[in-house]
Amino acid sequence: MIWPFITRSLGIATILLLAAIGELLDERAGVLNVGIEGLMLFGGAAGFLAALKWGLLAGFIVGTIVGGAFGLLHAVLSITLKVNQVVSGMGIWLFAMGFVTYWADRYSGPLPMGMVSPSIHGLSPMFFIALAILFAIWFILSRTHLGLKIRSVGEDPSTAEVSGVNVVKIRYLCTTIGGLLGGLAGAFLTLTYLACWSHLPTMGLGWVALALVQFSIWRPPILLAGALLFGFIWQFAISPETIYAGIPAPLPVLRMLPFAVTIIFLTVISSERFRKKWALAKPAALGQPYIKE
Image 1: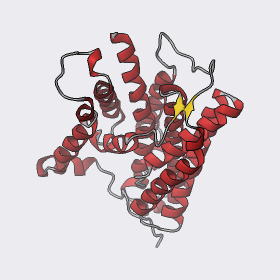
Image 2: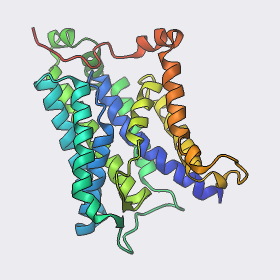
Image 3: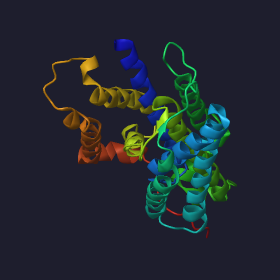
Image 4: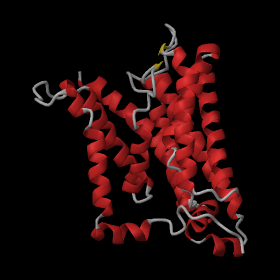
């Protein structure tokens, strides 16, 4: 019983990790995207419908591309048009909730028989792909010239521009890649973890991923630890009997556990003592539009 619980926990961790890696890359370049949940919804819906018509591989590809397209839309709104980044992200999320409800809910149900994602003793290879992406992002940010450009754009875009860095290009690149990863996370959710479409299946996972980036202090290794922790908490809230059958709390109360833990973490991060350290790690230009002088 414990191995299926572990594989399901790692499945949730994979979803959170993919979405949060994309957001971490966005934020290191100075772009805040609070619409991760919307990217996941679009990616999940597009991936599921594409899989019904063309197969699982097409579903993953289409879901990823659709997520990237809405990441690009966020870039156009927030970088080129200088729309408030929170407003832009919230707008994408709200539009996603309404549109996928109209577009995909009519196809609610499981994937066809025989359409099963590959696994290694129940564990999806996507978990290892997510680890590889995390390592690649960490290596790029900390060990390459491109990573230096990304970090400089997130800290002081004006100085970066004077040094010859194309701020708009870097921010577009990071925001689009963030969208691709958000779409992939949504496609993995509907095509592998759930293997079905249901009404708004993300259930707040995008918001947890957003909180994880803050929790990680923008450091990929801490992000991995946070994703694994929340994966365990999320799965425990769904199937606590796998760990301990005598838990007195009713299931609806337990399902609030991941969000309660998220609130606690955010409260701790907001404390004055932590905020002083947190402010040192936070990209200085995060959420600020760049206006070339």
